[in-house]
Length: 343
Ligand SMILES: [Zn+2]
Image (cartoon, rainbow, N blue to C red; front, side, top):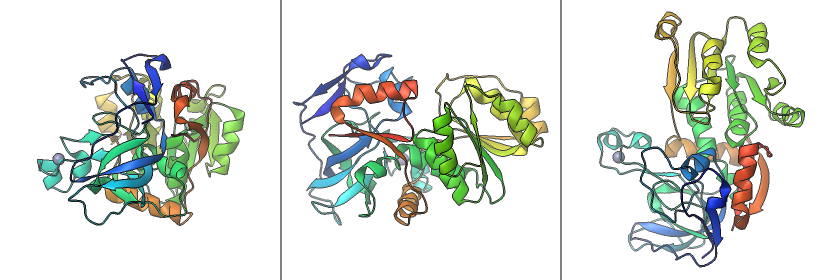
């Protein structure tokens, strides 16, 4: 089958190789074989490409947390799914046996496995997917749209619903709002009735973010974002979502209102930073880390898109063979919304 191999850890996209003779996945009794209709590139792919801290990876490895496609084969013990059905995969496999799974918190499973990280991912023509991870894809949604809802969309949705409980009338800010996560976070926050502040890297992208519903948009390359937000909201913001990391952490922290929440969901500029314990308690701040979300949340998000309450913003669709180019564009910011790959 066609696939993109990560041949070794590396900081540039030349460690990706497109092949047409990768072995087909062999499914177990509780899995289905999915013919990939689309996958997408995520920032976690870049982290994985460089060698994920603490994770043993065998090479060649197949990246890609998002899988949308058609069921091609059904395992012997799988019930309720048939060949030909359109699906999107919940991006995480949970064990069902650990203490957290037993508490019903399968998204926090200690034995979690993630497509493209612990498992072969979506940069391929076929992927073996446990049946428990399948979500039926309504016909209104394209495979490309569906790929926005797994890794990026689910993280945004989980962060803004269950984790922060963003309320109507509250203020929400995201740094880097023009990518797959940002374009959905803006819409989800607006759907929840919040006022949305977002940043991006060009005039053209600013207009896109306004069109998606952002109330206040800044170009973080040319504008003094921190000072401007402070001027507009001197008391501070209710919630800030930060996947950038050390580069923006202090500003995110200082922009929060007393009692505000900082949602951390990425390590784009590093893994560690300093902050004031004193200010954290004095200002009643909450710092909450998260990745992905629950399967039920992803089903809700699919439902919101099917009902046209939220629309994934697809920046571009490239052939799978152009995965290296797609990752380069992710690094340089030459895209808006979701970059999709199709085998
Ligand atoms: Zn578990």
